[in-house]
Image (cartoon, rainbow, N blue to C red):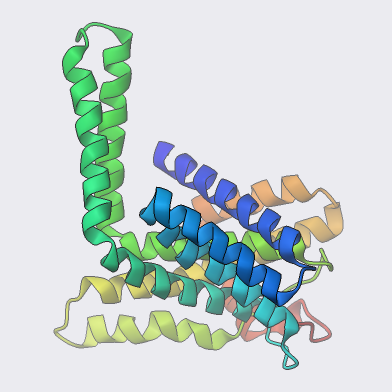
Length: 272
């Protein structure tokens, strides 16, 4: 539970930063956008290359694709834009993480060692000792989860951020977005490979989970839009949609799949 809350807080902060950045540079020229981003990348490269990699993979890619989709003459469904942005962002982030693997491991080991050193200096009966011991246990648990499901975690962070950006910057707040049902192939293909062949691959399982996650989030997005449309209580609608996504994932998944196959149930006129 604590890990889920911490992850959501990180995603919310990350999302708000991207939204603020997009609003800041939305009306400036292309050249100024390039100069601003090069400046940020150079500062991060000097201070913390790991942050630079995260900025490049998750932050900058999402921003660039948002502006590209907004200016395309051929309009792509909003749901498809979010998925495409998230997939591209995930791929680039994975490549960068592989490139910076040794540095990331060194950073994690250093943080773990620092906490361990603090614990060794404290009195085992003190409150401070119990606090740092709890921090250490949470770090170990979080690392186990991240290492086991790192691909899903990167994609989840990316798609939740992108989804939040489109909600915040969308002009038509009560619009029901469309999502192509073909994205279900991301789940179906790995599912059949894993169940009809002797192949047992962890990455195929991760990709299959990503496929389900796309439609679960889409289902939660539909719930949010419907509640917000009729209740006009944006924050209450968002809380209920997040609750359904986290604690009634199957409900969100069924809603997402059904509407992607039969958008006419909610969308009388095609909107993009």
